[in-house]
Image 1 (cartoon, rainbow, N blue to C red):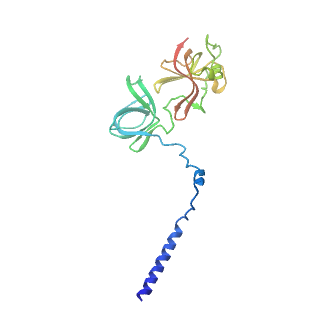
Image 2: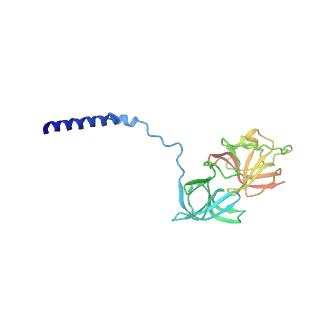
Length: 261
């Protein structure tokens, strides 16, 4: 009797294990080394998550549409700024990699920061705050497929002549490969002025030359300008400028001198 019971238990165990093995994927046959080498490598994610620094807010202030936060990570402190959001001293935050702006002076705060990192957003208490991912600070001149979008204007551009020893805007676009990295001069009218964005004033200039996007020149400067002013711009021509967040400029003049006429 005991012998019969033992046989019965063994058969039941075998049937149970057989049923379990059907739920497992069938083992793949071993591949030869040559076949393994030919196998495609796993693809990396299309967009990797931004690397950030975590810490506590020790100081915060709002100015000109931005929220500035001083963050203590335990090993260092740093300042970051993002489109205005709600945060308090003591909040836990994560700040993604951003655009460093050394010796940044905020005219609104009348304060100079040794370094500020401009970022599109900040994670506060595990929740994203500030601009949507991939956004530049508010008011930043828009771009379109790597080329500045032409500003629509009602300003009369007739009678704008080329500066002596200078270029028209259309000529800058046509000769950008040869002029890249070189100082240039151009005369035009201010059709848009955006102050204090990432530590610079942004000027859109047109002179009646060019068509579509090539009729509009983007300029950064510490100088101010009034809408409709005729100005002469001198500065270094930069091509393929990438500010991150998908904002790329095919052509831009940086740190320009602005002389109103």
